[in-house]
Length: 314
Image (cartoon, rainbow, N blue to C red):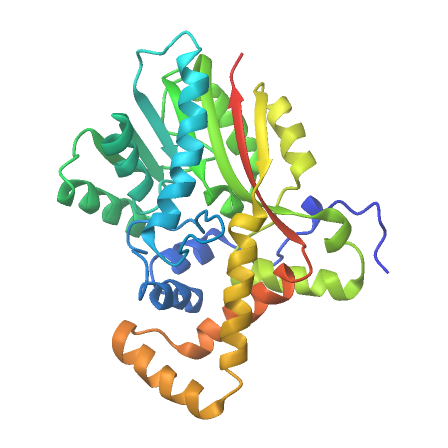
């Protein structure tokens, strides 16, 4: 039995490197095959978050990604409207991925967006998407590390990071950097996966399942809800609102994982679909299966939550 005093945020993926993240998002890592698989239903070349859906709403679609983005943006702009920089429409997107959220922020909310991402493939693809959607240069992207943002102090009134922090090796450093580049009175929102500490540390078996979850998602470690709040305070930021929305995304993901694994029990179907998937998307179904199985084992135990946070720099 693991000691109950072991903090889940201290449970690390010992093999993780930033190269794993590059590989996953540059299609040179077997874990990228999950995105090829999901591309059959959603635009994975634009949106990489797990989305947000209430009962009756279709989840495997770009609309679920947009619902999550809108939920974050609406709360962010509500804080912004009550602050000292309400006329400032510049948004910093930290670890912007392939640019879908930044482009949506421009088109729906009229924001000018600067996106930063550490993976060259993502930065290149995001810039291409911005040009194709005719929002360049109002939306532009640069290479950059969330631990050392290539931006001046107090240069943005708005900032967000959507699900990317899970891949950061030092999340408190990321929060300190956001605090540095935000103007006093600036608003910030982020979404991320969270470790549920009592479940993660309940047994050696749970620890192994959690280790596998971190591995298949190329994540170095996860914060808990409480540790994120502590890190936020340490970064000089003030939490104004937080939500756990697991039932609107990760629970749906787990349901879909269970369906996938049940269908995979039929060998003839698995072999046929594997050939079809390879032809249609280039994905190896065995890689997808490994990813889905590692996710399902953790999600069915409730060891991963999904949190949304809104904060201000005083």
